[in-house]
Image: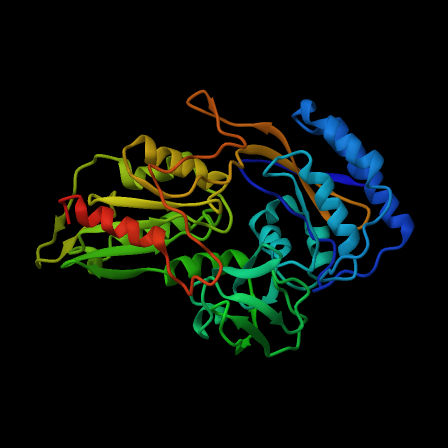
Length: 415
């Protein structure tokens, strides 16, 4: 039997049945059970009944048999392909399924660990307090039948060994997924072969494998992303929020931006082209509250400046990776006249619940939508004030959206 494991507004919720880097092959009985469970869940709980007709047609006419003749990455890939195709008929950004061959499985297990009982946690991660996986800090994206590096977590091995966003992934040794690579324990490194330009010879990199505790990693990667960028005689702070779900993310962001090293910069690029969502409604107050700047001067001359809201110009970067709670964050920035540069966000503004399926995979499904100032952005997303598309394949790390944000700050007359 499947079971519901929790309801989360503005976010995804995932469950892990076993710790490992690849699934065991399923027998026909497990596949049938899983398919029937998905059919029952969707037809009874999905929040947009008008989309069920396409789902039922796909289930009835195509889902009974597995596709063949394709190239897949893992043992259960044909079955996984059919499940993914089935769920795509619902056209909902919060409805999807992950298994333990993908780093996303472990990342979201940690983000929503409060939904897991102590007993279940002990079964999944025996003797370990926090969820983890072995990885390198890389996310791939498939375009035109090829995988390209789309994200490199700051401070992690993949970002430190010469790989660039836009590199075509030709091979990743011992990884079951090019999109969300996970590795078996006991490996110290992996060999990754990429093509940086379509007409150039491949490049190979030896990348260390590390144990990743996702929530802590997202926080540390966000902090590691910070830098000061010089442009046209001005200087700008930059920081990327990989996820807003760690309860300390915005606390640390506020401390960081009040650091003395940023006191002389002329503005800020806030990059919320994130990995996952998570943010509270009030988190945007760090950039939009018009409150006084305060200093406390002690007898010995020591000056104490309590953390306050950011007073200087801000431009925020968004794209389809900006999702869930961080879309609400982006909406509030836009509402308060902070320019958004990039591409429309994911449109993943549904409330969702997760279901543990008979094959021990996890299906996430939207069960309701969210209104912002009375508007429904589900499936629509938050649009940028200035649209700039990043061309991923063979981009060699070039970031047109960041470049445009810096130009905007430079042209504002305030930097």
